[in-house]
Amino acid sequence: MKLSDAMTAAINDQIKAELDSAYIYLAMSAYFEDCGLSGMAHWMRKQYKEEVEHAEKFIDYLYERGARFIVPETAKPKESYENALDVFKTAYAHEQYVTSRIYKLVDMATAEKDYATLSMLKWYVDEQVEEEANAGGIVEKLEFLGGDKHGIYAVDRELSSR
Image (cartoon, rainbow, N blue to C red; front, top):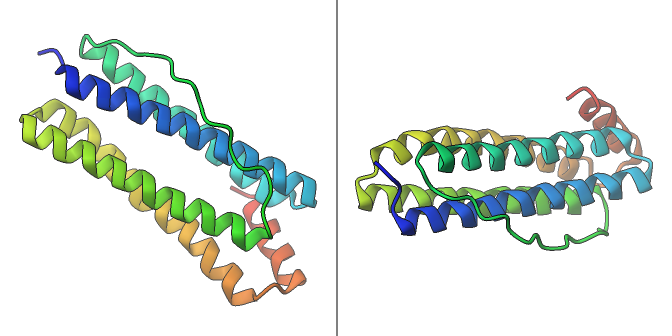
C-alpha cells in the first residue's frame, strides 16, 4: 500500500527537520572546537552523524512505500553560544522539539490507520527517549558544576569517549 499524500508530505517535512538538526549539531561542534573543548565537539559531531542517519532512514522508508523524497533546503544554524551549558540546554530543548514532531507523525499515522508507518515510527519514539536522556543528563552535570572550569574539562574528557 502506498503512503498517503499527506503522510508523504509530513515525512518529507520531518526529513528536513532531521537535516536541520544535523546542521545545528555540526555548528555546535564547530563552536566547541573554537572553544578548545574537543570532547564536546566530538559528541556533537557524533550527534550530527546520527541526525543524518535518521534522515536517511526516513528517505529509505519513503522509497520502500513508493513515495517520493523531495530534497529540502536547510536552515542556517546558530553559530555562537554563551557557554557549554547554553549549548547543551539548546540541544536538549531541540531534542524535545524533535520528539514533539515524531509524536505528531504517530498521531497522523494512527488517524490514517497506517500501521506500517506506525511500526517504523516506533523506532523513532524509542530513539527520542534516548536522545532526550543523553542531552538532559549532560545539562544536569553542567548545571551541577556551575561553571567550574575543572569540572567542565572533566565532562569534556568524558564526552570524547562517545
